[in-house]
Length: 131
Image (cartoon, rainbow, N blue to C red; front, top):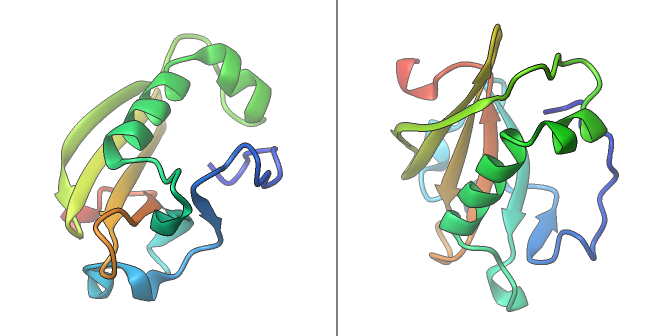
């Protein structure tokens, strides 16, 4: 995920905050910064913040679309498709496993503490539930 080539574009990322504030997570104590890659948070007051379901749908669509992946990632083999599967919950939000061959990551959509519409998008190299 860190290999994503595109730069932050405020127009394309409406409703998402550039940067991440772990202190705004509902269960912030469950997220040790060394174990997780904090990507983005939704901006509930923006009027266009995507819902948890919409974020999950976006990721599912894009992780199973090899055209999008080939255009945005450099170090992954894209023959075949990734799988996208909800595997449980962690930190108050759903955990999704993205896998293909040896590549495996976990995406957590963690709720914020200040507003139920705030969602933190967090990536883990390993299943956070097994720590």
